Length: 240
Length: 227
Image (cartoon, rainbow over all chains, first blue to last red):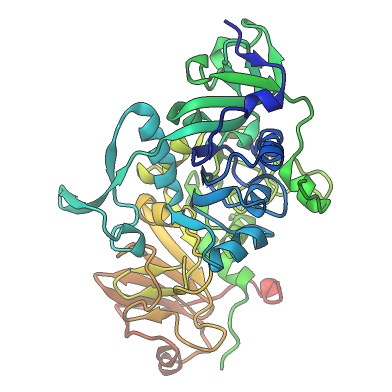
């Protein structure tokens, strides 16, 4: 078994129109910029994929990464907790014009919905959002005298994530706070593609430090020296 | 109007109530300032929702590593004992009741302890982040805020008019004029600036301030007055 791919183009080739795509990262930390840009390049060449539902904590910053996907018109809906950033113009303009849908989810609920999706748990109860606008229409049940809202699992067709090291079997480590949602998303998508900063042979990663075991991963592609969204934005970058 | 406390003074006052060894989450923006004022001899361990526990101060400009940030997406640093974890573990810390204190900002706090701090209504783009999780997870939920809005409207009210973040969740409010507890659906005044009269304080508060026992003097370091 060898899950290593040789190109980013190959890594994003089978994402279809209308797909739901989880994208790792919290702001710029952990954002798989090269995978996202490869997907945008495919769209610019072929017109696909479009009509995507994207799941991420945020809704893009500046004119790179998820913001660039939105700017190109590939995204139909964002599922996120915090669609604000240093430069949220791209999302904000389309949202206020009614051109993109938003499902706003409390951050911990978003994480738990993804975790539940990956663990085969269709719903769970939480006190988060009880009595607020974000609980509207959701079942509420009392446990030991306290109200809890029922939330549903969240799953996706694809996950695009960034990791630090990955071996041929798909075992992954992450770098500092770039870990964030990625280990959860790796469990909750049908097809999980990972850009790793360093691809290694099985056995080169100490089993004690593997965060995502290879069973959750379908393919890895090495991107040495990956771009960092925050630095791209500070330099005023646009993609394309 | 009496001279009010600066933001740094409000943050300093809130920091005085954080116990040694407490696990603390500070909301993004103004609450982050509380970390600067840990009393001598006490160490709080700060949690940030994106997956870091026990982090250090901001790095020098130019020394940022953008994989090492806090929930406000500002660069932070490592220090001995820092731990990383994914979002499900991070919110297990929040939602599982493992945090001792969360200190958040507010648009409004009601005498019931209801908090509004995520949305000012249907205009614009709504964003919630981890606020709704924090208010039901931390053992103690404190708010730091100006006593009134920029237009002079009370922020301590009988009932919130802005969309709620959580119901009955706030236990203490540190304002630019006073320290107020929420006790059984009432605001109880604990401390106030010595120079402000009860009448004046009540006039800028949107719900009744109750007095139970002594009201302490709210005195903060003068050198923070301009900070």
